[in-house]
Length: 264
Image: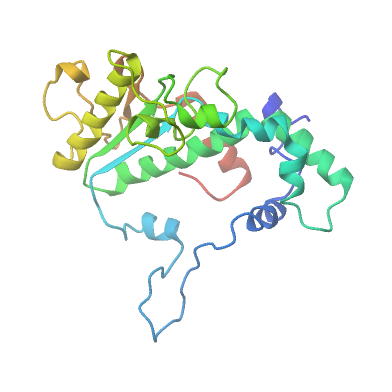
């Protein structure tokens, strides 16, 4: 496929936006609906969320948001077995040729396009929060790879470096996914202690690093400003970095300006 995945100028995938909405609607049975011109009941969602956020019509709260270093690992099984996965989600009028065309697109684009989709959503969210909220916004990238990266393991991607979508949860909560326990003195146990400390500090104080802490390697996690975008890289070492995925996000910013009316 000659598209964005290979450096071309076409939009990724051969399906139109409308067609992809048909496909995803077969997977997500119930979606949020704006409540317009309703007078008898209490309205929960009076407008599109993006419009409400851009208008500043949302609760301004202390905010923590993040990504993992390899979000797309969670869909590695889709890449390995795309036909069965996609066939179940296609409308009945789609042909074998349609299926093969989509499978080719998925294979070519999944890591670059799907990972960018996940990360861009987070990117746009924290940019808007930083611009419109007066409360601190903290951003992280979870990069650690260990035996409690449960989603990577369940997705069949244990041989891939980095952390899958949701892999930080294995270090934060007990899980019914596994009977594994932390080994005393292991890097995984140390990571669990660190991530629990960061999250607990944030819940209690609104600041994940309110004071110097040897367990957290004395790192100071800085919130975003309107012009600066620091983030904490959570790996074997905790390091403060800047401009999360800047090159990739600049590319997607330009793409959306070229092809859509939606921008961050």
